[in-house]
Amino acid sequence: MGLYYLKKSDKIHAKECFDFVVKTSTEHGFLAEQVENSEMKSAWVIGLAWAHAMFIIVLEELIKLGVI
Image (cartoon, rainbow, N blue to C red; front, side, top):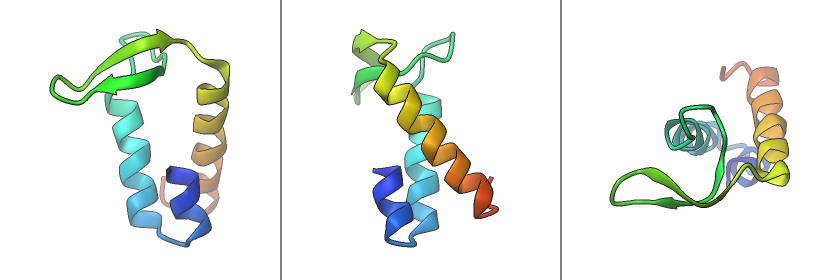
C-alpha cells in the first residue's frame, strides 16, 4: 500500500503505511504475512523475502522524497 500511495503522490499515507509495518514487525525486525489488528502483533508466516524487499523499495522512495 505504501508503494501505491507513493505512485499516487500521497506521501502522508505512504508514510503511515511504512510506520505501520515498522510498528508491527517482530522484535528482530522481521515482517509477517499478516498482522493481528486487535493486538498489533505479527501473525502467520514471518520472514517473507518479498515483504522485506517491498519494504526496502518503499524506504528508498521515502528517502528520495525527503519523507524520512
